[in-house]
Length: 519
Ligand SMILES: Cc1cc2nc3c(=O)[nH]c(=O)nc-3n(C[C@H](O)[C@H](O)[C@H](O)COP(=O)(O)OP(=O)(O)OC[C@H]3O[C@@H](n4cnc5c(N)ncnc54)[C@H](O)[C@@H]3O)c2cc1C
Image 1 (cartoon, rainbow, N blue to C red):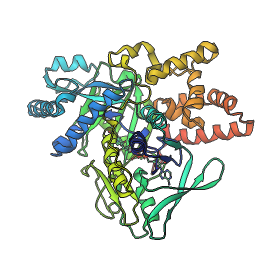
Image 2 (cartoon, rainbow, N blue to C red; image 1 turned 180 degrees about the vertical axis):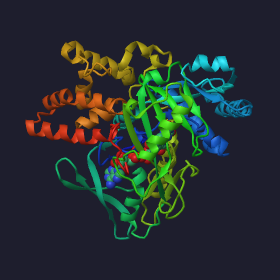
Image 3 (spheres, rainbow, N blue to C red; image 1 turned 90 degrees about the vertical axis):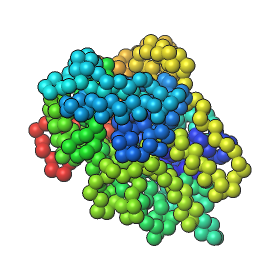
Image 4 (cartoon, rainbow, N blue to C red; image 1 turned 135 degrees about the vertical axis):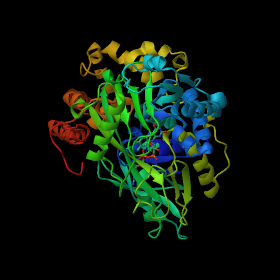
């Protein structure tokens, strides 16, 4: 099988197929997770909102997958307490009941008991919540994870089961046999400029928001199925959200859910749901999205966040599946289904899109079942229900991973990174005092995690760019020095790398005084 796209969906498919014993090649045009999969809210969740929409099937599927994810990657997924603050009399019984149902639907995969909170209890969990008009709250539990870190460990898992995964290789054309069935790809090596062809019994299109582009290469008359929708997040320091819980606002002015979540020692607030005409690889937050999140967060937090409090802003694109030709003329994507879709074109190209990060494993199982049937491969059952993700560390289940401090996200690899530091104590130095990352993580990213650029290291091997863009910029020269040593970059390459990173990083910085139209 050839899988096109190295996000959660594609890498999930590669793991599923390789662990069944199929031969798999995955190609990603940029870095693994460069698309939407590093830009999510980072919740392994059933989706309380879909419960309200009556999509019980999706909620139950996602709750089960949330539970399996915790079992298979306990070093990266943990439970988190969410509080829904109530300011109207009807909200407490309404959300109390709904969240009880949410807990019950999880069955044996439950994360914790939902219950109603008094005003005092609500404030004990969320001391920085606005008290004016507050009546109480409702508490429930969901999962939280680090999306790009999980993806990198999924890439390693796929390798360990025999798949070959390449970043910086773009599929430019699909090749067809004499009957017109897709039988391979032409691909372009983005680093060397080289071209090559690879053939397969089946090609799987897991290109997320870009899915229609590849479908049109297979069938120029194919109807579009993707309705891309942009969502942004703002990152602040932890003082905005003190306490031990996240806030979930079930109904914002535009009918969406808004979260304020503690993440890696910062506060993550999002998200929006803005229909856009087409997807880009480095989407940029729009002014109205930024203003909306600042205003909504200000309604709930004692310290209303301002533009100059924003440490980082990032945008991602949901690959939602709409009706035919959906991307044109859609005014709201908030109500479009988050179910996944598997589409098989007449040419035999298998497209898997939609869904959620949380449900990637189930999506992959469905997709490989269908692809294997289509390609008439020998039957082989899915084995991913209890397949450990690379870095799996049983101690993390008992919370012992906290002892590994900031290296905890590496799971069983943390010991290897510590060995690097033992051998060369200079690698134990922090890259910046504002973030916990040390130099050894850069060396590890290059040697073991296929980081190729400064951006790969600062955005997706560490999360520096997403946590604090200015600090990430300050870290970049030291990262460039370390990567130059590892790769043997000359000075020109080092400078090119730095300037490419500065350009990308400028999208994550919110300039307080500049009002950029159309941003
Ligand atoms: C704002 C936001 C918040 C979200 N929050 C959550 C959440 O909290 N929990 C949750 O479960 N889900 C969440 N989601 C949904 C989830 O992030 C996505 O469903 C998931 O990441 C999609 O993954 P993907 O692999 O399909 O797409 P992507 O991650 O975009 O991957 C597709 C990849 O294909 C590559 N590609 C494209 N064309 C080519 C080509 N020609 N050759 C090679 N490679 C190519 C791209 O470079 C890209 O990396 C959120 C989404 C958004 C936008």
